[in-house]
Structure formats: C-alpha cells, structure tokens
Length: 283
Image (cartoon, rainbow, N blue to C red):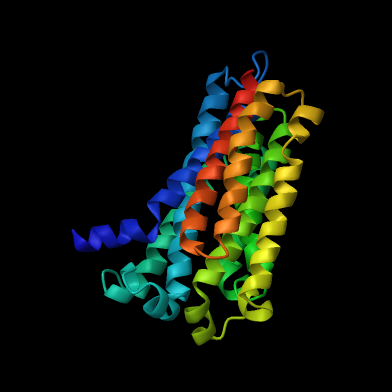
C-alpha cells in the first residue's frame, strides 16, 4: 500500500485532476453549434474525454519526471515526497512517467490536428522543463504558466469549437499560473539555492520577484473584461468574474507574507475564474 500510495503521489493527483477539469472547461467554453457551450455530438464528447484523460496523464507524468530530477532538492524542501522517503525508486519513477506519457500520446492522436500540435508542444515542454527551464529566472515560471493556460486551449481545440473566448481564458490563466509559480519559488528558495538553481527570487530578490508576480496578476485582472468586449459574453460574466478577480489580487498580496497561503488561494481563484467563463458562455 505504501508503494501504491507513492506512485499515486508522484502524479500530484490534485493537480492532475484540476488540469483535466480545466481541459473540460475549455471544451465547454469553446462549445459546438447549434447550442453555445454544449457538446452536442458523440464525436465531440469522445474527443473531449480523450483530451481530459490525456491532460491528466501528461500532467501526472510531468510531475513524476519533475520529482525524479528534483529528488535532491526535495530531500531539503519536501522530504515527505515519494522518492526522498523511499516509497518509490528513481528508476521506477522514470518508468511510471514513460507509461503515462505513452498513453497520453496515444489518446492525443485521435484529436484534431491543432489539438495534436498543442499536445506535442506541451509534452515536449513537460519533459524538458526541469533540466532546461526550471533554473532560468522567470523562464521556468513562464513555461509552467503557458502549460497551465494551454489546457483550456487544448480542450477547445479537441472539440473544434470557437477558440476566441478560450484563447482569452488561456492567456489569463497563464498569467495567474505564472504568478503562483513565482510565489512558489519564493517558498522554495532555500532548497533551490542549495541545488544551485537561479530562480527569479534568487536572481532578483524575494520582494522584487513578488512584485513581478503581482504585476502579472494585475495584467490578468485588467484583461478579464475582454470576453465581454470581444467574445459576446454578457453582463453575467462580468459579475461572475469579479469575485475571483478580487480573490486573486488578495491572494497575490498575501504572497509577500504568507506564500503557502497565497498559492492555495490563487488556485481557488483560477478555478472560480474558469467557472465565470462557463457562466459567460451560457448566459
């Protein structure tokens, strides 16, 4: 049971499930004719389900690979993770990630060409993230932000729906995810410095890094009315998105004193913002 639990923990099941949910939201927001926001045919439903499952598996595999490369850092920052505590071996972690990636690729190949292209870019970025991008100040955060935002776009492309509102949602989600990742780096600064990584807080200092995170949040909040202006979303959307806008700004402010709390509430705010897009699509 401890071994099985270790494999499950490698995937970060909460993150994987959330990513799958965001892909599903992208599919719903994109929608297909004749009823906005509704997946109306069996083919679209199958493609949406394949996209959701592929996303969850790819995220799980990416998290496992990240744990493999970060096992020495995690021994300092997160010693209770599966590899540092001995629940799974590094070799088993790589094999587990490879199986998940293989199944994710197989599922993605049943999707339209644009969705396949998004999947190829994302899978490549997931594999390369820890070794190539994570230690570059701000670059690793931007890569994770783009990956997070692209889950919506992937879902929309999978069903072949209207991509304009989904593209806006993807950009706003990318900005919020970038902010959350910078705040996470502030929390992990001790282990990252020990490992020789040059993350944004290490390169420019904690306070300046948090200011960058807050600036990205402000840009995202300022852009949140765009679906109302450009994508025929109604007033109901503006009302619905106001709550997560305020929540994320408050969470960003908490990052200056309580980065762990800030991360958690930023994630909640992102989910509420995604829900606001569903409201806008149906209202």
